[in-house]
Amino acid sequence: MKAKLATCCLALLVLALGACRERTDLTEGTILLSITDFDGLPVVVSAQALPPILVEEIILRNIPKDPTANTSELQSVELRAYEVRFRRRDTGTRVPPPTVQGIFGLVGVNGTLTINNLPVLLSDQMGNPPISELRNTGVDSETGSDVIVIDVSIRFFGRTLAGDDVATEPATFTMEVRA
Image (cartoon, rainbow, N blue to C red; front, side, top):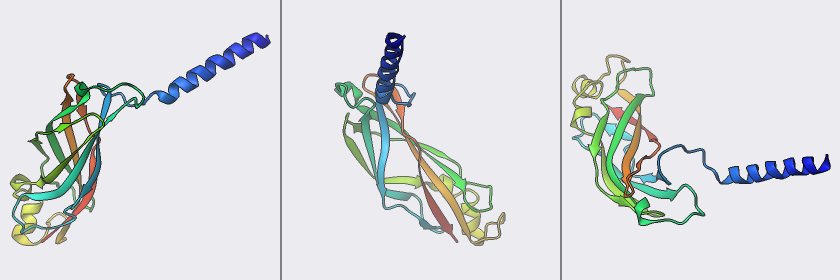
């Protein structure tokens, strides 16, 4: 009986230790692409501003899922596109249309890539409600306010040189668009 109990305990210990090295990430491939930092966020923007509205600096990082495994240049990520989506933080429901733009760059395994002056509000976003209404009338007709508060979410998409599709989790910041 003691031998069975010891065997069961040993098996549970082996399973638990093995699970410590497992990631819960279920994305394809052996790496994670992550937005690790951004600076120069446009947190207050005039509806009268000319597009594009830019984020001054975004840093992407290529992180192996298993830090103890061997890495290869085939785990480097070629960027393909980025997506910007919007969500209202105030009582309004209308948001600028999302945008997907092509982008080029290579994020080496265990490396970073700095992207400067990334457009997040283009003429399509500035020229459509609710921002265009704020620019033309000075008021958002939905809320009666001269300020629109929105969350801006940015996400990058790429492919490893080995052919695995990868994407970052969205990074979000809040922006006020003022008449």
